[in-house]
Image (cartoon, rainbow, N blue to C red; front, top):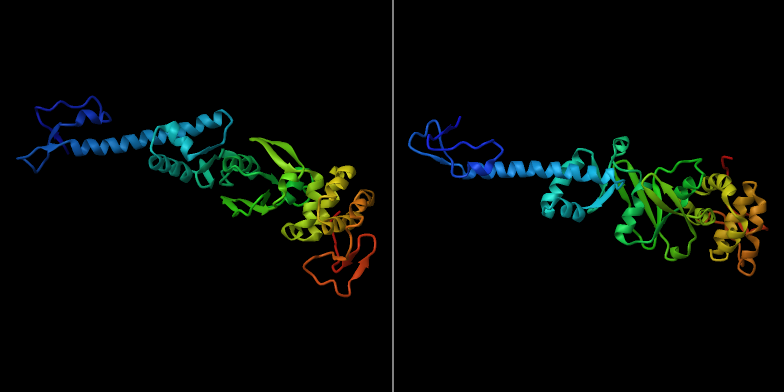
Length: 314
């Protein structure tokens, strides 16, 4: 298609576009003129620099994974690649389209190994701690998700539940979902550290989880679901620690937890809660807070209006 002018020196390789600058071409149909190669050189420059950038981005995430790190930020990628933020975002977008990375939060990426490509993201326990650290937010895995990690996995939750200090919008990343719950005094909640394939995760203690399951029952599928989980979680509960934490928890939570522990056959554990109610249990509370207690039978031990029948899977 192109014919080199007899005075022109061909480049050593097509990819060496700098050598094309100033080279003249004779185009068929244009016998009187010569075509400057500056425009062609610019085209080659754009094409091959983009290709090199993509290759560097792929190498960047491969190097991170080889070191056992599966998360990074846009700024970190730009610094490593030596590219502008717009160019870096373009390279990362292509890797995302290929399923190699995902972005559960703006500017925060995770590397998706082949075994998790069907999820379109890492499992939440493998990136939420790093994301919360990146955001500078105190947090812990809570409720049904905490119960699962602590060994009570009768019903595997579809969404990871995380306690934070203020409300946050949920995360949807591929098939992975994370829902946040706000608790202003969460810094006083006892937690434990558990290991995952990508590091450590902070989880509410078994005792804190038991009380929060009752306190956030609606978010956990209702008290029947809570009772089922408690029937398994009870094995991990320490009565003394449960009693100490009950003193710091709302009396209604303690009353409902005591009743459910009795109901699920763990009356000895429930006994530890009674001292925490002395002088605090001043009124009868409904078993299900959202339902009327009018005409409901009373449980004298826990001063609860039994306004619902609780069935659970043992």
